[in-house]
Every structure is written in C-alpha cells, then in structure tokens.
Figure 1 (spheres, rainbow, N blue to C red):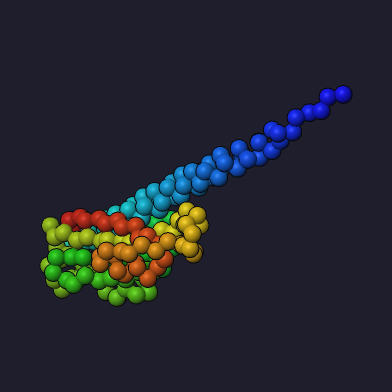
Figure 2: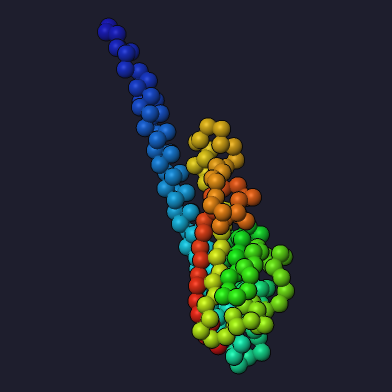
Length: 180
C-alpha cells in the first residue's frame, strides 16, 4: 500500500485568502464609487431643480407665488430623493443680497422671498445661484486602520458649513438667470 503525499494540503485555502481579500476590497470599492456617483448626481439634480424653481418665480411672475427660501428648500427636497435634508447644506447667492447658508430641511432658513424682492435680484436678467454640500462617508474607511466610523477630510473654506459632519463634502452648484 502506498502513502499519499501530504505536502500540498491546504493550498486552496491559502490561495483563496490571498485572492479573496483584494477581491472583496475591489468589490466594495466599486460599490462605493457607484454610490458616491449616485449621491453626487442626485445632489446636482436637486440643486438645479431648486434654481429652476426660483428663476421662474421672480418679480414679474404672473402668478401670486414668488419664490421663498422655504419653497426652494421644498423643491430641492422633492428632487433630492435619498438625500437627508438635515445633512444638505445650501448657500443662496444673488447679486446684491448677502449669501444665506441654511440646511435643506428649512429649519435654519429665514422666512421670506428669495431672491429678496426689495433688491433688483428678482428682476428678469439677474443671475442667482445655489450651492449645496452633502457629506459622503465611505465604507472603504473600515479598511483604513484607525479611521473609526469614517474618514474625515479637511474641507476648503467654502465647505466650512459641511465640515461638522463626518466624511467628504460633495459639492454641487447651479447658476441661472431670472426669467420673470
């Protein structure tokens, strides 16, 4: 009776481990990239819809409804499916009024029209813009030793309002001209 050689035992387990760990990392990275791109696209679309809402409701609008901070935030919330309104930081900018920073849930936004009707900002031909920042926390950070619940990046000064959240702040902005 011959004895079997036992020197090749366990090779499959070691090879699977050596290939499996990088494969899982690549799979999670691909999913996280797709999720980040989806969040960015949704954010950009929502900001554009908020700007479109405002430019059609200026001083010469035939209907009685002028754009307000709350109305623009509502339009952004409706278009931003999947985005948490309390995490979405918005900056409203017009030609003469000071910039207003608030969250999309509308709790920190002032009441009143936007752009302000007391200035020339809501007249046809005037440019307005909305900028939004949304935090993105990636699951890839669990592979980073000592990263904790998420990686924190140092944001530029324009993103300071979003810096109190953990993660990377995805920016999106939209600029348009008042129509009515």
